[in-house]
Length: 300
Image (cartoon, rainbow, N blue to C red; front, side, top):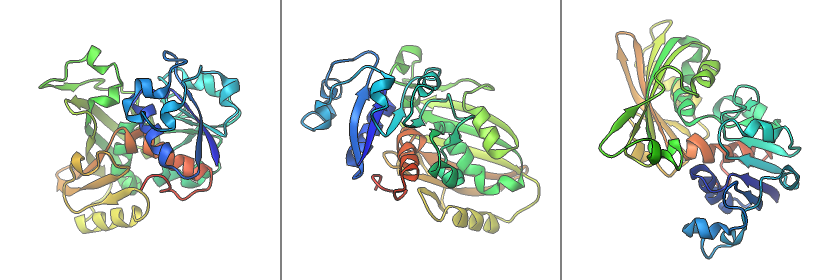
């Protein structure tokens, strides 16, 4: 059994992680931490864990000495705090913040499974970055530029989102040219990228409409065949229709489809659950690779 710490266990992502880890046959959750609820049992904060062994776990302080007693730490903490903590850790680390996505092994299994399997620290991709990169990755060597228009549920903004924004009957665009996920998208695809995120009044789910400007003309049949071959394994699947978020919410899957041509190139749609494939379930994929388990262990 692998001893696991979940650092930042009470946020949306932390709770999603705990639900998945609880089902994993090779996991022993030895430590859960919080900065604001130390000493409280998890069930007091999350009723869904009431009556379960996990619900009886008491939230601990965020102490590197305690975390290092585990084999691996999932860091589900705010951006700007994870990297400093990781420097004091000797156990393996899966960082779900943005802090180490450009410096550690990038935790996108569809592209970097071998590197992940040997990594000490993995930077788990951002939710928007995951959907954007997967939408374009099979065509990486054919890309001139990409434009990504994305829509996400408000859970991606964290538990305090409603204090900042009014989502009722509303659509909000933000960080029009400087979103935190943009550098990781550019690094992964190696081409010019434009990316604009929007938030809608839905709890979870994320859709990326990708406009891909190609170096040469490819038939739609060739493109779809390429995607089907590229994504024949794992949790990303090419589909023949335009996918919707309802297909993937609550699952670890990414569906990519709607292949169409316009005057600038190719249009592709990808959908994920921002808390699952965009965060927690992808972190479990990385955990499985790092410890030599089947990629899908604990996720199906």
